[in-house]
Image 1 (cartoon, rainbow, N blue to C red):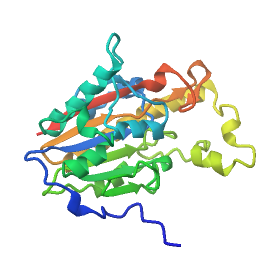
Image 2: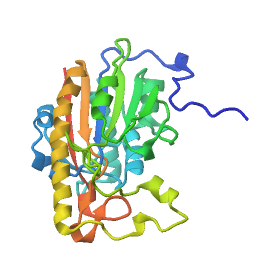
Image 3: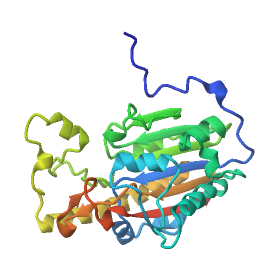
Image 4: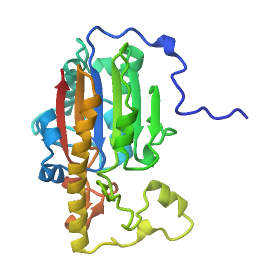
Length: 296
């Protein structure tokens, strides 16, 4: 039986990549995992505000994997506007890529039939495409790893410094970098505190491993109201920490780069009896920060 292909392997068809459009911008998409809008604003992140206004937008999903699939379809968090057709919102969001990438003529039709941003960027626009992810559910063997030149799961969930250290921008082609940042995800890591003393809460992989025995995901919320308030404060602190790291990111990012900093979904800290994210419906799970700007 042949060995499985290495999901980190380089593009096996580099000759397919076309020459990029003159002046095409690099695009850096930073996803602060699980970060909700109100904790982001409370943190008063200086570097983020320097990139652009922190908008209140809405995610299309309440969990990491489906949200990232939507993001990689090219649909960034929306404004939740009333009295507007959904089709008009999609069209306006896709039309925005012409300005974002500095390439004329891009539209919703540019993503047909694949509807996948890395495919458009690499196979049709000549970009180098890279992803660095923190969450195991986004690992390189998942369906998200398509048309990336490099796709890497970081060794731990709180390693934005490691991502920044590995970032490389080709001088011959425009670059797309996706960074899935785990510091803002439970246990909300910040300088000097990785949350290792907090209870372990299994995600998808933990649930699968414990399918034959009683899983901790079936138990009650393991925190008191005071502890939940402390967890919310930990996310605020994680934003302040990540904001200092974004300053290092901007030192690495070259000119002629479009930057988006946003979140895949929010997090619940006991509001209306809910904790965490995913299989639950709540407005705070959908409210996410959105920042966009250019480094010219």
